[in-house]
Image (cartoon, rainbow, N blue to C red; front, side, top):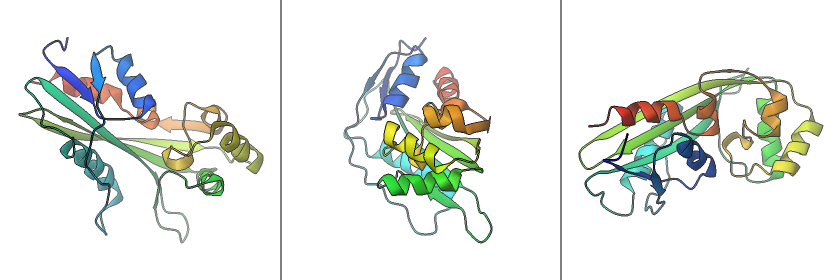
Length: 197
């Protein structure tokens, strides 16, 4: 269906690459980039993934050629306000205890996972976001440390991956796209590519 295009995925994430393969669209991976991630102070949380996805697109290491479509993305975990604590972005944990802190914060609560995706060619650019609400059961410290020590989720926003053990035993409900929580809302990517001209 997309034989007129050369699709480039600008992501090192094996999860995004696997989900892209699931669409059955031929693509190549090229992660050469000059973008340095930074967020201006005061930027609303919901705008951060868009800035990152568009920044990665703009920072691609070369000019696009006719027929090429570059896809870049960024996923963010947002913990809503609770009591006197404001909302918080949960990035990638620094170490074992930081991962445990994040999972304790997620325990027994709802959080939001937002992914922004930018698709860009020589003549067109489309950016969209997709948000999924996720609920965790109360997690014990034994469960938290078993997961951290077994799966080592140090490269994952929020210190977890829904498709791993902690998701199997801990997530009680999601509202929205499962694949968005994995890190790539492929149904929306397919929709945009299907309407590309």
